[in-house]
Image (cartoon, rainbow, N blue to C red; front, top):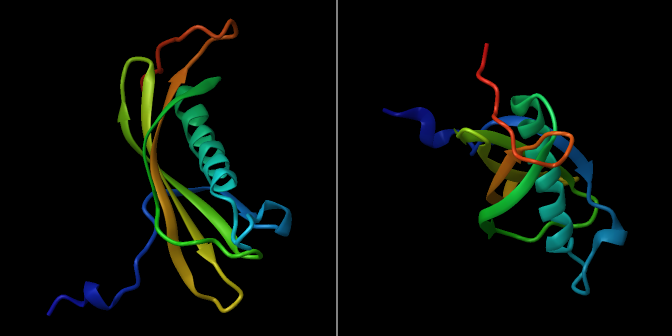
Length: 132
């Protein structure tokens, strides 16, 4: 019997950013504003992209975004990243946002695919270095 069905869902990738959802980031319904969550995911993706590119990067696209459930004020928001694709100058990174509420419940609330390009000091695209 496959016991993997008994395991709770787990984040895919590596923890890149963790913060707390604060009241100032709430929308008119009392949940965290989606734009705030997207900005946290973009920051998490940039952390991973910078590490892989060994330098400056810029977000050039969000290929997809799915909001799965609201984020309550006070939840610990953890963003996990998984490098899906590395091209000559670009990187496709899947970012998942998970929350841990005061009750201890952990769940995925959002996922998206972000595209970053490596840039030089002048803001021009540059090659993503090969892994050593």
